[in-house]
Image 1 (cartoon, one colour):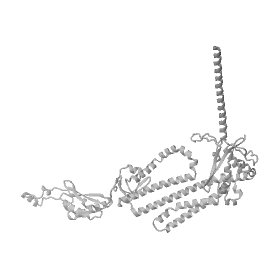
Image 2: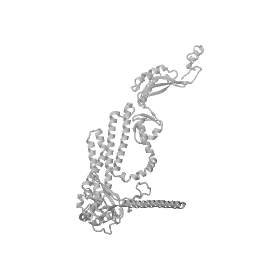
Image 3: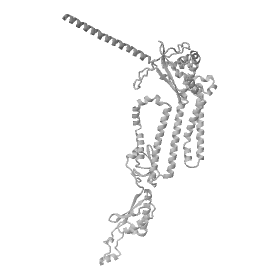
Image 4: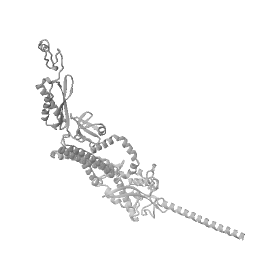
Amino acid sequence: MKANGSRRLSQLLAVALLFFSGLCMAQMADDGGESDGDSDSEEREQWFEVDSLNEGLDEPPDEVKRLTPREAIRSFMELAEENDYAAAAHVLNLSDLDEAEQQQRGPELARQLVEVLRRGEWLNVSNLSGRQDAAIEDPSGQHPLTGEPRRDIELATLEVEGDAYDIRLGRYREDDEEPVWLITPDSVSSIPLLYQEYGPSLLEEYIPERLKTSFGRLEVWEWITIPIFLLLIGLVGWGVYSLVGLLAKWFPNGAPSIFAGKIGGPVALLAMAFVARALLDYVVSFSAVATTFIRVLLILLIAWGVGTIALRLVDTILLKVTRRIVGEIDDTKPKDERKLLTSLYALRRVIILITVTAVSVYVLSQIQLFETLGMTLLASASVLAVLVGIAGQAVLGNILSSFQVSLAKPIRIGDLVMFEGQWCYVEGIFYTFIRLRSWDERRLIVPVTYFVSQPFENLSVKSAKMYRYFDMKLHLSADITVIREKFLEFAKEEDSVVEHHKLCCYVTGQTETAQTVTCYLMASDPFSGWVAEMNVLERMMAFIRDEHPEWWPRDVVVLSQRDIAKGKRVDARSSAETNDPDEGSSA
């Protein structure tokens, strides 16, 4: 019984072992199958599987190389330079055409595509991938698709009547043949439409064939035509500038004449840009190298012209408002008007900032820098921020300080300030500096950051009214009551003296021989107060000189024992001394 039990136990263990080993082998087989399937799937994702490629064409010659994107386009362009469009057609995927049409239309489509690439977009073949799988090589590793194979890449994007059309390369494999790179069927179907937009112009039909040979990146006729084209555009700009100048003289004096006189240059730039674009669209078309440069230049001219005209309009409106509401820039105007002018200048700076930003965004969007340099700009944003922060620290500080001054308004346009011991009117608050006008008509240009970091006295922060005073040195015998009455009389006769109840005149000092009399008056503004102070002082001096010359201070020299400051002496001795002709006193 024990032997039978042992035999049965061993049989059960053997069956269990065989069962588990079978499961493991099945699992391993399944894993191997899945791995092989994944490998095949990954390989298929590197190209498009097709049953046939360009069956209507002959066998591709040896000159046609299509293993990498760079080889395919370089071979295509070289064959086109040799006018071998039949061979160049092998770089196009003509699967959407019948076999009979492939032989007939293939060379023609290749010729049209060459013209489109020459004129539509400057294509640098060296920038294309030289790998068979077209994987992106980025040593920095910042590109999100670094190292991943591609089977479809973009060569160019062209617009026709606002619609975008891509010219793309695709990687195709026929059966077990080596995968090759070809222009995709969708791109081939759009070639005729692109050729109508970017093909040769009417003018080129009259150009001799010998002038169409390449010389560098351009053809010979382009080297001759481009200078003539630029000269013609320059003449148009000169004519428009002269016409705007004449119109500015014909306009009546005022804002229209000023505005017309300021926009001659920007309007000429706009006219040059629009005429050049019309010529490029309807008369002549150059190679992509020249066309790209000219179109970018035209975009810059249009943006610069529109932005400048907008700023000139703001300046003209600001000048008109200044002349009508504020008048001459000084602190005699009410506080609200000076505050309005300061706000207008702040608004001008905001408009300039918005205009510059809008123009920059427009230019970058038109030349498509966001698409081609987006990753580079993002990658170097921190470095650029550091460089700009170091190099432009002073400029950025002044700009931020100017906005701070405009918003907080510690000073306003027209305020009278005492800055570093000088009387100055605030004449303008700009991005990086403040322009001050001194009392003698000099102009002080002070950086904003320096101005706000230094203490200054704003004499107009609350009101332009100001106390003025002057001192007079008089003899001890001068009657202060008479002096006070005359001062009040003279001060009230001055138009710029206000708040007569605050007029005052007091003795503020005394020495052995003289007394100091100080007179205070309140004036409507500092400069008028200074004038009133001088007028009243002159009249007080004239009064004392004409009516009481004995009140002028003088030194006393004692020639006898008698001092006139003690008054008359009643004794006989003093009387006798007074009558003695040999003795006396004088002042």
